[in-house]
Length: 583
Image 1 (cartoon, rainbow, N blue to C red):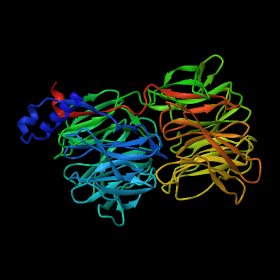
Image 2 (image 1 turned 45 degrees about the vertical axis):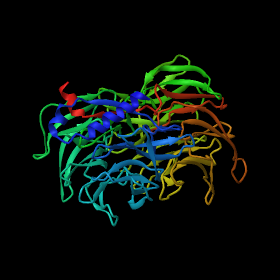
Image 3 (image 1 turned 120 degrees about the vertical axis):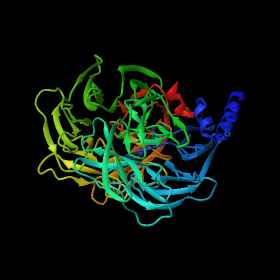
Image 4 (image 1 turned 60 degrees about the horizontal axis):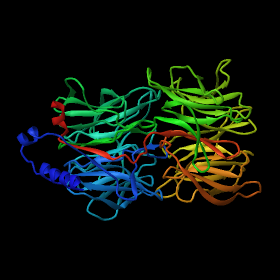
């Protein structure tokens, strides 16, 4: 406690420094900010298809806003003054994520319930400013303009900090699927943003634009979507290393060579967002850890480890074959920064590569007899569905192509249809694609919300899926495939990544605290029945992205991608980070 109090005194002294000579001569001060009791920092989370930006330092460097989640799965934004010892919750920011500050450090902008909102850090209710169905970040300038990314497949918009009708702030060009993570320069006119290319592998271009001009200039290529300016430098990620690159804010040019600041910085989301924030006054905050690097472990229903499969890796999109003898995963190829599908032989523990195209291949689904895989690939400039024998012999068949993005989710037990997800500015929808006759997909539902992670029931009559229609969190639902059929909520306090037991008597899902849940269900009649929901065990599955677990046919064993560290890692804060460049 004495050490923590001493850090608070040092921080107070630091913020009292008004002269630049003292600022330049001061040495960096490093300490960590731990979550409040009963809460954990939500550093690895996503909301639907939205990667959060969970850390935000105020422009004056005196406060840090961080997303936190409690054991009930409630997400809330907390604010910690770096001159005190305790963080305080923002009562009006329950369910909020991706915070960003007003230039005077008085207000916080954030996203919740499909909206862009703001709240006074000294108290009061939140105020809704605009719609933002699947937001990808925002930034606020001194002229009262907020530039924000409202959806995964949209260009940037700008709106008054007092609210009003949004206007365009950028335009998508050929080969781009969305713009995200805007960040203003101190002049309040220019801002950075990241473009997500149609081909999702590799680094992403970062552009410099202006609120009063349609022009933009490419500045650099980054391994994360967020780029921030502070103390004459641009901060961004190269691999997992946080970089400070000298930048002339008058000539708007990069100068000199990039300098490493911190190693092993965490990222989250399908489009990586680096977990760092920096103030213009010289305060840096970041989180480190082996984000997404895990090992495939077998557990029983009580959470007792039964065995392991393979070695450590950045696994995603885990799918067991119907007979349980094989498993497909996606893994990154570091040489070209794209993912490929690999198949494990369960008996031998041997992993062989299944896809070989230079583009991204991920999100696979097994045929009922295990002889084929359908997977998603962006090799033609948009994410389409392909089909290939699971033994690797024979060529690939382009199953379905259009201009949209399609992530395969599930293959029906009768082999007659697949389910895929398409993100959209309205949120995103699940579509059923018949595999006979003309390939004409039909939506499962079309709403203003995101329906994602869909799974056919074993008898083919129902689909379990995740939706964000409930306030503040995703929930698991079941919908009938029959025309005019109803839907039923399965999870009771937040849920994601549903899976069925082979006999259809249980649905498994992950609670917001990463606990694996089992819901007793009965879909044999004309109506669907939901029974007791039982917690099984807490996993260490990475948050967001694709499926990180699967279940054996009898529901007694679970294969889980288990990371080394949970996302409750303390946040590192560095006062006067720029002095560290001279060390």
